[in-house]
Length: 96
Image 1 (cartoon, rainbow, N blue to C red):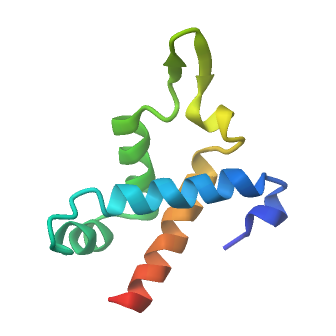
Image 2: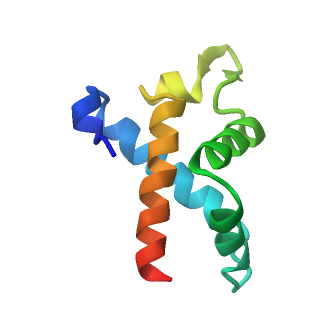
Image 3: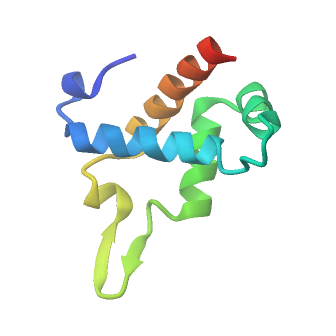
């Protein structure tokens, strides 16, 4: 996996993508890891990123006179979010 340094992306963008991936995977934290485990077992990193982008509107203008997307605001893109899901998957694989 390429790091954000190799892609020329900002460190802040990478950190925000990791944060989004972790939040997406742990959003149903009702004391159980079932969602996390099933999401990682049933979906690819690309599918997880696409679901997250669609549900949270990361590729849509933010509104209120702010016509940039979340990706643009954080100097990142879908590819980096996919890589963040891959890195998060690797981390949780070690922990579970």
